[in-house]
Amino acid sequence: MSQPVVTVIVPGRDVGAFAAEALESLQAQTFDRWCAILVDDGSRDATTQVFADAASADPRMRLLRHETALGLGAARNAALDLVTTPLVAFLDADDVMTEAALERLVGTLDESGSDIAVGAYVRLRPDAAGGYTPGPVQPWVAAATDPARRATSLSAHPEVSGNIVAWSKVSRIELWRRGGSGIRFTEGRAYEDQIVAQLLYTRARAIDVIPDVVVHWRECADGSSLTQTKHTVPVLVDYLDALRSGLAVLDAAGQRAAAQARIRLILDMDVPPLVRIAQAHADDAYRRLVGAFVRDFVARAEAGAITLDPASTPLLAAARLW
Image (tube, rainbow, N blue to C red; front, top):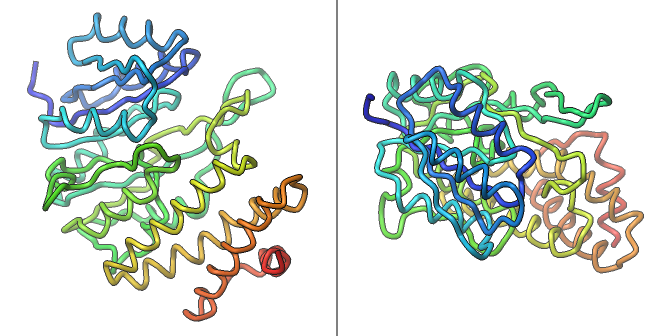
């Protein structure tokens, strides 16, 4: 067996209904020089057995189990500490990796020598037949990854800052460990990949992007996906904090164009659904949090003369009064 060049970190907690499909998508990769670290983060369902069986049957897979759930950030960090390959990637255990994902992402890094390669992704949504169907590539995803670019930079391609998920990328492990304490996921908070993505982009010597869909990102039918729980105040607090913190990384690095691209995307895409939730929300605290966030980011947009989508203007105007 050839030596692996990329470690795929697969964290999972109570996703037993989907974990086998995620691991099968990894085993079906057209690129075979990979190994995987499966992190069972205190699961109390079939995830534990699925991971254990896979690690027992496939020598490329190593199992790491947390008896008590520590969270997605801690699960990823624990696995990062164990990576010995030159490259690292992520796959959440309820998602699906497309067949040529590693081949395309690793291949472009081999050709360019860049620090990180970024691919497109689509939502995997419940369908009428009781299964899941992948949707189209959304405009902000396409803006980040299409057309293909080799050895670009954040200043040359600021729209890549809109691709903030951990699992659409392959990167050099040296990038994670470069300088001081390196890059780590925030622990004990949701949306921990927002800050990490911006740190990777600002510290990378060069960035590749490809338009290929590399992951199908599942939106669970039972409403348990994190993106489906933004109506709760604690999740909202983490979400808004992650958006602010990611922007702060870009500001600190002097990446003005990328910061402006993020402000525009947040106000056009992230904020309108939050405002709609807030309009019908029973808790005044939710409206106050959204209102303060909107006032802050609209002020930033106005100061930077950023043009926003006219369709979002009425919602933003209403939220500024809260």
